[in-house]
Amino acid sequence: MRNIILILILFLAGCSAKEVSVKTIRITHNDYSFYVPEGWLVFDTNSAQRSKSVMLTNKSRNAFILINRINTNTELPLDEMATLSRYFLKLNFGKNFNGFSDITFTRRYALYRFVAPQGIKGRVIIKKVNSNYYEITGYSGNKAGEDELNKVQEMIAESLK
Image 1 (tube, rainbow, N blue to C red):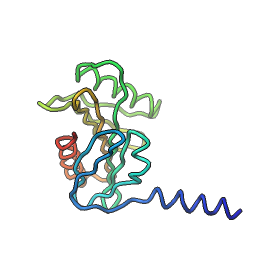
Image 2 (image 1 turned 135 degrees about the vertical axis):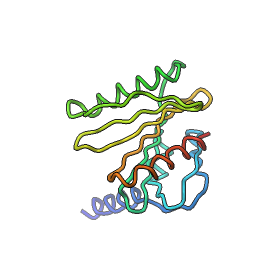
Image 3 (image 1 turned 90 degrees about the vertical axis):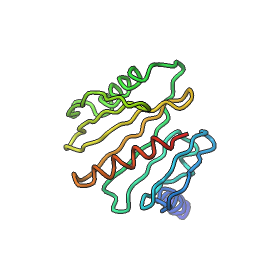
Image 4 (image 1 turned 30 degrees about the vertical axis):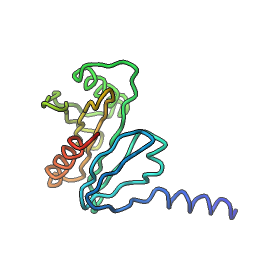
């Protein structure tokens, strides 16, 4: 019984969010880095080194950003990668999925918006860095926080290396 409690305590401690100021987070195992803005928390960077994802949240915990390196053996044009991203997002949410916006392209990345189950709105930025593709997915729990979330997403996308 003590072992189960110890494992549970270690698990909960490992999943806690850590507050950081503006600084570079380098995930050396996956060889990418990005800036984390002041007021945002990084979830469990130790686990992130074993996976290809990093999750951030704001202090009020009503907005989240997930940065995910996309595994691919084939180099695709950005529009095709964005289309695949939309396809897999729809599969993930299943029949409760509520829809997409069109894919928009900037000089540096592609982006689209979606409405997940229960009306949760999100936005995905797809960016290519060298030969790797990354998804930067943002979710906001309130309409007022969407502008801030979009700015943070774009800052992360621009700083991703």
